[in-house]
Length: 291
Length: 291
Image (cartoon, rainbow over all chains, first blue to last red):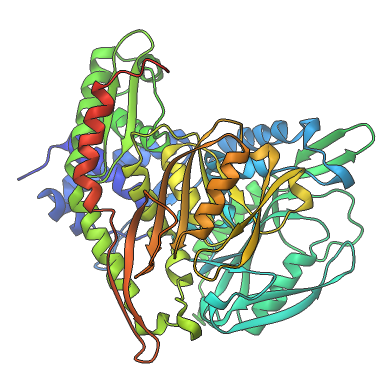
């Protein structure tokens, strides 16, 4: 039975949101609703316009026999700015300060709505990169990594501090933490990452970047490449950052344990918003003869 | 400017999916689209019908001044059965078997689409319970707990094996593992769980239930109550299960390390599907004079 436009729009919106970054052939919808492709195209136009007006993403149409439509979750600069501001406000609660100047983030990282939004932020900014897998280190980064991976529809791999019997054979490396210069171990199940993968690294907190640098060394063991790095918070006043290119949502600018005060500023995420458009343009124009 | 029905349907579908289990006043939509409440009601009828036809949930309308509409993600028995069968098929790959009879599940738990679907399964079956928070133990259960919590829109708390400086003061208990009778420790940040909470426990694997029993003891320390228990896999042939009421998606029926064979059957999730309707009816009819 043919489906009416109103029912189709609801069903297609639900379906597209459940399948981000996945190319859906128009024939899939045409058969699902027993409708002409021209009607489906019109529906997709309405969905695209609505998503773009809300600033939460877009639909990309790929022409040709192997073509179809793809939902790309992508926040507008306005939506991203307002979320970064909201995050900054949540950070400055004085009772976040723990002995030793550590920050209590468990409430933020335990809030699924916030975690989803953080995931959408990183999925937005890395939407144009070739990413095969999202990597993080146990345990605080795990929910963030899954949220990003869910929007990019790629698997997650989790690096651990110690090997587990339920992971099979593992690869381990030693690395030096950036701030306290201690030697630590990192372990990854051999089966969990394919050789040559393009890896997006996501973590909750970056000080000098030792942990992330450790993950990069681990990637070398798998001949894998860093496709991008995203952290929720970066700390202030680091003399020598071990990591070059990364995006952060929030940056600690001043933590005073004695006065129990925390000052934060937006991270570099928003600064890079304009540059992203340029990179995007380049990606679309350029040819990659070697691929 | 007034919004046309087609645009409204897309926008409302997106909004409802982003806000499960949240009561949205009809006036919110009426103002957002500058439309009459009667039109909004008609739109919601179309969305409700479409969600129900797909077997992925429903909309519940609450009448009165404090009323509104709520999206309840809930899988139909057909959708749930077909997913349990898919899971069972994924489990029986012989290369899952690790030395000692352990199972490699990292590929399943690293797949965000599967994890989301598992989350939807548990959010469906516990949709009618009063749940304030989802609890799991680090690290394998974390993605599952977030997926469930995201559909129920409640926070996640993570129990650990050791205390972390970034968690502040903690409560710890000792418990005995059910199968190997070893004594282990479990730790929860004091701030992360409010006294008297109703807690849904989610984990990836249950043998005799020692770990889950440990979490229940920990809940006692917070005067919190178990609102439900859900596990992805339960193992076979346990003489004495330490946990009474739980739902499992998959049950190992035979693991033979020598022959490298794994046999699984659906867990008790589907058996309880019919009973759930009865419980639901009771909940709606009964009065709770003490609440």
